[in-house]
Image 1 (cartoon, each protein chain N blue to C red):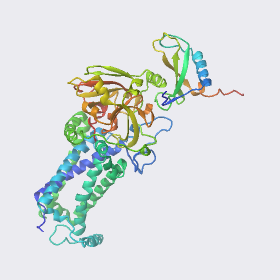
Image 2 (tube, rainbow over the protein chains, first blue to last red):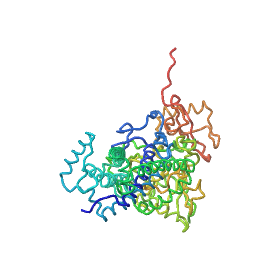
Image 3 (cartoon, each protein chain N blue to C red):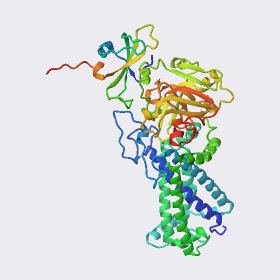
Length: 496
Length: 90
């Protein structure tokens, strides 16, 4: 076994890891705040949560949606805080990318240099030895390191578990919350017991990380703060005073960085969205955009009471249309197409192809429900209207006026969303008019909504009245590709 | 025919709706006609923020064959058409 020490690459990746882990924890809490309840069932049935971090009570006599359940946490614990889910997601995902890259470099070098021996338990004897080490600590004494190694038995086992079990588990449960991955590989999310199991386990792993960090820092203090931090600065336990000063300076700089990043995010949300989004979006385009949904949940999996996000158009013309079973409803399809067309609901219901799919709905807030959706494949509409060569995106304009209909949403104006044209050709991309065997309910988007199963829920526009093909969406609204992208700084292509 | 969130009304309830239409002096917003056929009702109180708890929209179809937009509706309270009128015993 080579002599194990603390080479420069271990020290550098350790520092980078601290930065990313701290960002991940705060931005993760921001994401949790948007739906501060945890479940062991994919129905996210109200009242069945095993943990809740909110005291809000919902009305029973009025439709409420999950936006009403959102919490606003302080910036001290969440990044950036103040119910900024969109910005929290940008910070979380860019940190995920950085953390995984840093972890890959660390693991590759660990094996390339032979430093992996520091974590490998060569003998079963290490387990009783680890118990003895714990007892020694409880006697306020320090256990000896293993012969020729930098750690004692409990340290070796703990660090090994964090590097090779906890960190990969956190990445795996995070990936299991991606609608694109769930849609393409439904078996994968079932490995964890379902999407809400993955979310709950992701949270429990966060607690495990927090517990590790607290104990780790405490042990650094117990073993001698200056000497131990020196190993991570100079590679050996020398110059304890200097290393203490450098460590404190680093921690102060880390706090200042968090404060500045939070302040900047809250003061300049659009540029934060653009800068972080550019990196995150590029990664998504490569890994998630190509994935196509292959879901087929069984009838018994259908959620009895599918959760709701967004409130219906509170306008008389809509209510009159609804009470007449949408007989006057007309869907207009136009823009950059050869043949602009209109369709009544009857036209859509009598289309030659009628597609039904049972799928897992992922809300951007974190809750899920399973529903059966029936409608017209969007590709058939596209083939009928024949987009011009310059058409690149599809805009879905809805009857929802967000300021009027949904006070919990932070913004005003007509709700719209855009998707890339190629999504229309995805096998489970439909314009749905039925749900769970009956007409699409008003609260779920009647008479017509989009189902694009590889994306989170807000992209699947409800109460659609107009579809437009465009070459560019930068001149629509604030130019970010959708109402939520414009108003609450969400990301546009949301495969996770 | 699709029903979705709507409720089908019986003949007694439809008759009460026509009484209320007459009482309110409701006319077709398009052609001004006062003759209507009554359709389904939609409970508004739960679904829509601006509505009172017992508000309903009742479908009315203008009987004037020349009406350009015959489908309209009237907003009524539950007691106006869904229930038997309560008798005052005082």
